[in-house]
Length: 460
Ligand SMILES: Cc1ncc(COP(=O)(O)O)c(C=O)c1O
Image (cartoon, rainbow, N blue to C red; front, top):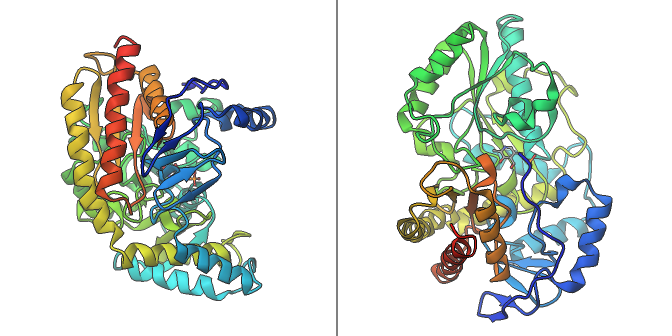
């Protein structure tokens, strides 16, 4: 389904000035329209979906444009700025790396890369001893798929090549990762689907009411796929589009099933990692250890770097030079990741995510109590939340309402990204993990006001 797009027209906007928010112009800013028009002219439409703010600079928990407007950031730049926007330590590290005279070394060794892979293994679950660095999240998930398929077919046989994923899941937009994902609209163009990629229902207890693990086994059996065929099962540790977690028992059973099947359990933490849900890796909520973890987004606080972590028994399956990438272990991005991880640990940001998450979810609970007929669910943990807006009294997503709420929040000085998830009815709230109670509460009061105002305006 194609989502709505924000209109390139400035709207009369109330002026606001608080410690954390400033709205001094109409939004979109009239002077920004030519820039926005250039983007629409020269980029594919697919790049145009976000609210019409031309980001100029961002610091800690706020984002600014160059016309004096300032937003409390409830987006973290789509779950990237976990340690806040460009903290001084990050700026120093990046400038220092540039001053060192080396910002690229291809796959020739460099010291920041050596430090980062060591650090990643120190923080990864026991049993993981190798890290492969890449650039984007989709590359990481695609690489994990490749590792599982190579490992299955080389160590067991040519038919051990099936990857199981979950309906509604999102693993990126490269061909392999998109094929693995569970959103049919993203793969209708692929034609005859590769039968070695299989989706099973995500046990969300909402669209699929039966959350028992029997459904997983039955779905495979119905397609004639035995355990012997599966080389890997890939799960997001929470489903990103809805911030939906699996039932704990389900994941424990899945871990055991993978052990029995000799299949790798791949944990896609590209969105969920580095403290977002109040644990360093969100898989920790289930008390199990996966075989592979894919990281991205929040790993570096802003520079493009991703990683696949796992055990040498399959990470070492390729020979020298057979699994590389031009920007793998780029020294500048490695410095960003090292700094971001240091800040997360030193400043106890994972713990802050859990603590501030309590406030976030309590406040969203109040909004849901007030608007229970148009809010299907509020999900998430820590500083991760998703509000599903529905047509009154139904489970049908209300995209126009969610879209209007995001637009109003932007006009009131709270940065949100466009609604997403099934039917585009979900508004996600995920501030940087450094946020404190005061700006969090201020931003949430804006969200609450926007829900009331938009439902009135749209007669919901
Ligand atoms: C769970 C998950 N996996 C993979 C990706 C793809 O990451 P990227 O956009 O960096 O390729 C995303 C991005 O949103 C994601 O949320």
